[in-house]
Figure 1: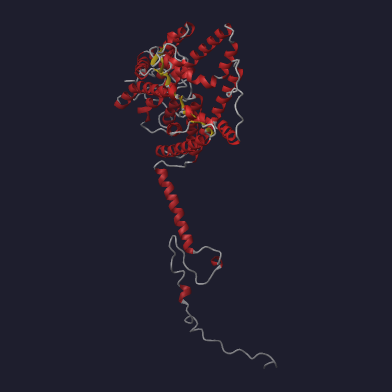
Figure 2: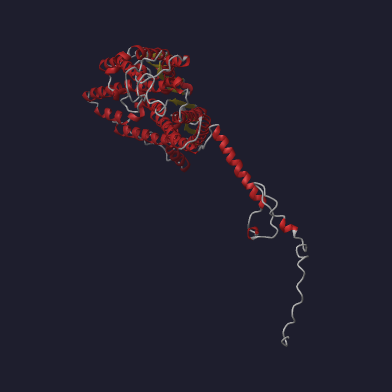
Length: 544
């Protein structure tokens, strides 16, 4: 019975038979049956929450995944061939240039202090106090030139030449060129680049030899381009069109560009190579890498005590003669001239290599070059031309130092027996290293000045070591090798370890690290350790 006003009862329920076949049901059931591909996605039958207007299209997600995979594969491929991140190398190159600028400031300050302490009795105003007031443009150019002196000095320290050209109207022109390295700046830039690159390679870098060469070259190229631009922009230039006068001074040029490129690239590359793990064949050629370091130790061991002795003796003589003020000026200017004088001493220490001073042109007419003919001439400064209280200790030190260097070269040296390559490189390492380093020394200490003075003529003055120094250096290296092989083993046991163990410390640690997991005891019965007091017996017995 029904209630009035109620809804009528529902009709009979539909038959369950046709329900599964009604509607396009296969489309909803086919989605799970199609397995999606690895980088694809299946289209849903109905829009879900992830398919809103702001979400990326499925095709874009696939392309991004493929690009990420390609970048990862490219990085892995580059790592396999030894090309890693360039950031440490590029940063190190830039920092090396900044260090060179700081060293240039030190040189400038030392030169200014030396000039202020000099008692010349003359005015320090280069214009004599009678110059006309400068225009605003000339004053601005002068300020830029003064601020650019550090950049000019760094360019000069990178094998550049400082060129000055003065146009004097109807009187003609005067051009002067100076070529000489402020070695403090050169040494600061190259040493920092080498040490920083070695540290970066050991701690952060993933580069192999190929990557080190690539990024070092690019870093040096970038620094050279920036240095060339800064050196040219900060040139000292003044023009006076009314009187026809102009002055231009700068050190920018192709020589400083390629010099900066080389002085940044080579230390960076050598630093990276020094910081890498050495291959298994490294002991065959280890002497080739250690020999230049021994040459540097030899040069410093001789030059530093001789230089200090000469400086002290010269200062005492000047003070006795009442020239104490000049001694103060020379000491304050030590960063300017000291490294060059120190670099000349190893050449004089060979006892058969003089310092050659040559001149050409109308030098005699200008009162320059005592003892030199007016047109051209050469003077040789031998070690015996120095005061006796300088050259006598110099000769004694020059004869003693090679014996000490031979002991240093002998201690903890290992040459694989029966290997032809190892035998050849062990004999050739020192002669080649001494010869190569002598060529580098020739380039570093060369000083030259040329002047073109119009109707007054031209002149040139240069100073360097004698050209035959590479021949002498070759035989000096051979003599050190012979003493190390046949003389050092007899006195090695009497030499305290701390005096000589430091030279091959890294090689000794490398041998200990490679031998400890497998065979703590070597074939000759000795146990390799990383201590500075390594076993000394039998170190020279396997030299073949």
